[in-house]
Amino acid sequence: MTSCIEDCLACYRTCLSSAMGHCLEAGGKHVEKGHFTLMMACAEICRTSAHFMLIGTPHHRHTCAECAEICAECADDCERLGGMDDCVEACRRCAESCRRMASTH
Amino acid sequence: MTSCIEDCLACYRTCLSSAMGHCLEAGGKHVEKGHFTLMMACAEICRTSAHFMLIGTPHHRHTCAECAEICAECADDCERLGGMDDCVEACRRCAESCRRMASTH
Amino acid sequence: MTSCIEDCLACYRTCLSSAMGHCLEAGGKHVEKGHFTLMMACAEICRTSAHFMLIGTPHHRHTCAECAEICAECADDCERLGGMDDCVEACRRCAESCRRMASTH
Amino acid sequence: MTSCIEDCLACYRTCLSSAMGHCLEAGGKHVEKGHFTLMMACAEICRTSAHFMLIGTPHHRHTCAECAEICAECADDCERLGGMDDCVEACRRCAESCRRMASTH
Image 1 (spheres, rainbow over the protein chains, first blue to last red):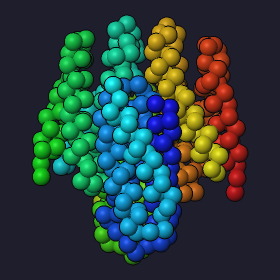
Image 2: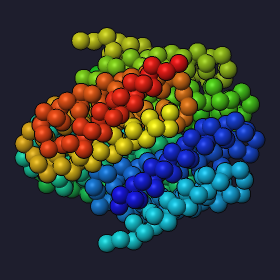
Image 3: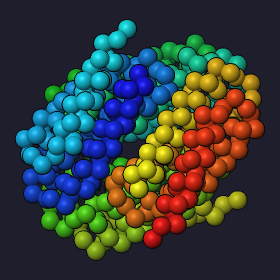
């Protein structure tokens, strides 16, 4: 679980700082509502999934499942736009980590 | 959606302040790990569901579905302990509101 | 304190939904880094100040003082841009409410 | 700034998981309102300070200053109780890191 918390917080950091740094500076398609909202939703669900694991609630499996979904979608969208390799990598890693966590009993 | 955001934030306020006020002061079964963790998980998912609706992501339906689950469980647990009528009411109202939101297309 | 929590959560809602709705749709100066970051900082400090009051920590006076600062700055910036009357009003009300709370002993 | 973000998130993780794990299990003075509330306030201000640095707002200096205050107080209180060496260390490191960040121009 420790490594999943780390992957969630790493993805939270990368998505949030990329959205508020790179995307706002780049403008254009980077600040289109669909993409930007997905980045912020990804940052928030990663933050919440980490929080759920840290407080030790068994419901973390459900937030991790949702986190895996949003991260996978965010990775695809960042790949489509290009120039966001850090986000793509952090999202893919977190999606994989959360998917495993969601299916653990 | 406005009323669901309100119900989520009202439940967040009630659960968080009851856990950190009433439960810590009452002690005993009120600070047992199972109950206290459920209260904090409920506060956090309500906070996140409201956030998802406010940023306008379509994924709010999934966080609302999870919010409805946790609120219903929290309402039952608060009812079992007794003396937490505010929480029971706020959780039931939020569960109902989120369940409706989760099934909206 | 109840009314200050309400003002903080109202300002959080208005700033976050305006930034992610109105600002992203309007584009142009509304998504310039300075303005957009201020809106998001305002939403976050309002969320945190409410949280501090809800958990009952005496440090809420310091987060309320910082909240008053950021809200006042955000109100001015939204007024400068125009077309954001809801934000201006919510920020001014919250700034006033937090300033009072910060100076309470 | 990267290392301050890391110190804040490390302190957030340690305080939150210790409060919701170790403190709830140990009971007694570990769940007394003063101590437990301080732990949760520390976790929350660390989370917020990291968030402010990640979104790139110049106001991070004020949240870092407040973070340094609360972390120092939390370290002292955890030392007083004993058996919480991880928290003491994470809080002291974060306090030092945030104090430096708060005084940077």
